[in-house]
Structures are given as C-alpha cells and as structure tokens.
Length: 314
Image (cartoon, rainbow, N blue to C red; front, side, top):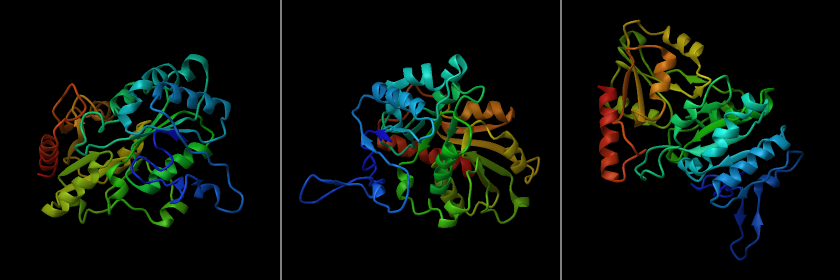
C-alpha cells in the first residue's frame, strides 16, 4: 500500500507505523504479529498522483498474486492521475488483454470540507464501467469493506477495485461490525433493511450508497417514520440488479422508489442507478446540479444536507 499519509492514515485510523516518543525510530505492528503471515509494506508517497498511481498499476502487473493498494489523501486527489485511470485501469483489459488487481482507496463523503475534500468523483468511474472492466464499491460497514478487499485477493478474477472509503464513519458510533461479521460473513452487494417493524406499512423505499445512510436512518428514527425503508447499494458496478430485484419483492408494487445521494444531481451515482434500475419513475433527491463537487461554505453545506434529509424522510 502506498499513498499520501498512508502509514498513519490521513484520518488517524490506520496506525500502521508508530514513531517512538523520544526518537525517530518507526515501529510497524502489522509486521510483528507473530506466526506466519504475508509481508506487509505501507509507504507514504509524495503528492504526485500520476507518477505513484502509475507505478502501483505497474507493480500490480508484476506481482499479480499480491494485494496492491493506492490510497488518495482525499478521493478528489486522483484527479492528477486521471490519465492512468483512462488509459490503463479502465481500458487495458479490453485494449491489450492485460489484467490487474489494483485497488484504489478514495476517501469520499460530504462533510463541509469544501470542493476539494468531499468527492472521489464516483460519476467519473461509473462512466467508464462496461464489460466488467472494474468493480466500484462504497461500503458502509467495516466488515463489508474488509470482505471487499479479501474477495479481491482470494477469488480467481483480476480486475481493478475502486473503493470509496469513509472519513467521518471511521468515528461514527453506529458504523461498527462484530467479530463474527468478519470471520463468518461475506461481501454484501446490497444491505437490506432490518430496522423496519412492518413492511406492510412501508410506502417509500430509499436507495442510497455510502455515509448518507446513517444520516437518513437517524432522521427516520427521530421522526418515527414507519412508512420509510432504507436499502444500501454497497456495490455500484457490476450493478447488483438481481440482488436488488430480490429485495424489492418484499415491498408492495405501489411503494415509491427514491434514490438519495449527497452529490449534485449531475454527479454521484444517480443517473447510473436510474439507468440500471430502468424505472422512469425513480425519484432522485440530491444537491442541485453544479459545476463543482461541493459547496465552499460550511453553512451552505449544512443547509443543502438538511434539505436532502428532510425531503427524503417526509
């Protein structure tokens, strides 16, 4: 793994390396677990996304049975490596029959940090998805993130994995998984709603992806909105159409279907999901269409975020 501040994690979540208090010596806990285990290397890289992402793509070809990960400090920063995404990560398999298992970690989530620190540009990757050339995931639980990475290494398929990773969810009290979720579970392309008391009362079904789920769920509980159900799309591509169809069977045919996202309507997964669901009546709740990914003012961010949640749960 390499990236900008990846040794400690940009959001202080990894602690792959620890520096001694009275010196500059580094200690790597992951290298000292005891017993037999694979070699672990985590590197801090310079802010040179084009060069480093290109190197890691090449390394994934040279070491196809390893787990090679490139991590952006914020998801937006892959912008400078867009050429690598266009020319190699999304296209090399079709152009030259070259397979890569490279993983990209792109921290993503609207938290009022401005236009350059909010979006990993989900829409850009989805616009390049075709013929099973990539996997795009946006997990909402620690275990599901873990299983997406484990699946990448253990199954006999080698295509790039684009993982939109959390920021605030790293410290969210509801974003947790049990040990059993890690040891006995598997990656879930869709997470159905287990918090609905009675499906017969549901008149509005919200589909979403990423951290906005927790905000929607908290608002639903506060409003005691028993008419609402929330389903999480954890894998955006390949789109889990069959799994979603099975989930929808539990609801009335008259249930209103709504896609909710934080991103502006012309960004995020809105148009992609609408295409795959094939429902012309699918309502979209989002920020207004925009030329920039997010607002520059924290107050404006809070206002738009509140409007999205209010519109979704009513």
